[in-house]
Image (cartoon, rainbow, N blue to C red):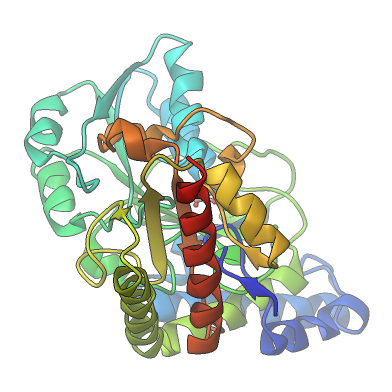
Length: 381
Ligand SMILES: Cc1ncc(COP(=O)(O)O)c(C=O)c1O
């Protein structure tokens, strides 16, 4: 039995998404900028996609900009603002961002920007009073991860948005993990910039979105043709745009159903460990309480996660030791360090990310295997 519980790293392209994409490789392959029927057809599909995405995300069609991935979207949000507003030289972010944000602000830090890295509490929530205190007239923007990719903390965006806009500060949200897991009503959320990545919700890798609220002045990063409202050049990646649109439609329509399913399966997962008296620590908020559905990040006392994942992999169970991009590092993750995971637990952390295809049988197989691995490793200590 093979079980993939690494949906936080990436997801499988769904059959219906692939089916929707296929005609755009060999039949509907026109360039939306072309001035003939193939081009008109492509342009029509492109506009239909944008209209549907705008409806699903509750925003205007022209606020949606396709990018190559979530990383590009966040780079654009942060560097694009920096290049457009050079007099503002302070950025506020958190200590538990994904590297797409952390390394981007560090790039600017090396060029003279002051970066305020907000602390988080022991379950990963931003300290709001620190945010309030850090904002000043030099603040370029606040950039915050909505759903943490490692520990699943879902920030209180209402409060964050309120604090930012009370002080006229631009807010960028990294919603890469949150999309299709929690409702995204962009106009109600009142954020200024927001990053999305298709491969986290069953679209292919290589397509993302930067939402730019109407009226936000931002510099372009990619120059060339006139695509994406003259803001991001490059011939539109039509098959992937169609795939992302279909995946977003399916994900948003099924959101409540999957939230419920994933929370139930996650609780069941932890119950199995409890029944076997396994000593573990759930990193991040409790299941169902401002936690990304499907994310289970647990640490085992005095165990090394690489040992556990080695045996899980041998049993054809695929998980992660944190953020996929971090897996080559032997340092404990910056996220776990910043939520003060105790010393005896910090090297034994594993992220199981359940997905829409995960079944109870999968969880039974994984927990049975995991329990025997942890018991064996503990006995050998
Ligand atoms: C929270 C978060 N932000 C940004 C990214 C980067 O997205 P992409 O892989 O599309 O570049 C990821 C990917 O893991 C992520 O989890």
